[in-house]
Length: 262
Ligand SMILES: Nc1ncnc2c1ncn2[C@@H]1O[C@H](COP(=O)(O)OP(=O)(O)O)[C@@H](O)[C@H]1O
Ligand SMILES: [Mg+2]
Figure 1 (tube, protein in one colour):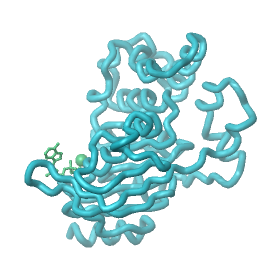
Figure 2 (cartoon, rainbow, N blue to C red):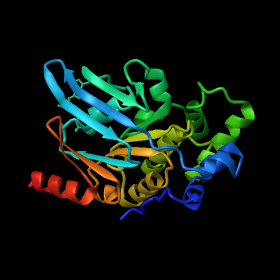
Figure 3 (spheres, rainbow, N blue to C red):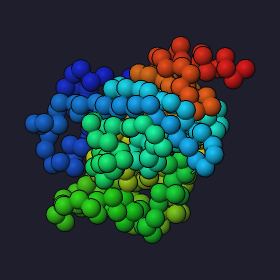
Figure 4 (tube, rainbow, N blue to C red):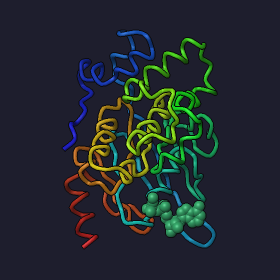
């Protein structure tokens, strides 16, 4: 079972927010209070690709910090995940993130919501670890020392500090996934979407990634087939043929999912 991150005390947030503390260069003040959970509002969303209806009327309001999305292959999970940061815009209906509409306010939504792809090779574009992780900061107005501090803090946090000068594509699968997560987290999004973050990893690396997700102060929406990963989440959405067929706490939702798969 993953440790459940509690947000009700100052200690729990400050203890899991090492990177955020280092990157801001301050140990107190506003970072001792947990960030507000992201509000995701999905209203009457349909998604069609050519003739295929991939999402068939999704209505959800999500305010929990740890939300899982499970379901059979082809049930629409990745399409749903991509709707949340505007990578896919709905054919009908609206998706709002903290009141911002993904279709109208796409840039602002992208800044707010980070996306970690299943295959880190999709996300790693620069030759070295350091350059790759720094890329996310390009659009932000930061001074050179601020940039350097953020890069150093996030690489150290994910155990990649000693590898900063190495070729990113020569990292192990687990290190690549942590680099991809670091590349998203360096921009300090309010919410992070993970699409099958552990599917390509062995057990040890899958555990490292699970730990990285568990300790995030942000809202995390995680698409996965790894039911152990989400056992301590706040909420689980079960997708089937483009619909949400169960929406509950993990034990009840996962039971419903397993029964459907039999
Ligand atoms: N860009 C696209 N164009 C056409 N069909 C797509 C596209 N993206 C997904 N699909 C189709 O939508 C269905 C659901 O895909 P997806 O959301 O990736 O499901 P899952 O992640 O649950 O496996 C699949 O049949 C897939 O082929
Ligand atoms: Mg998928």
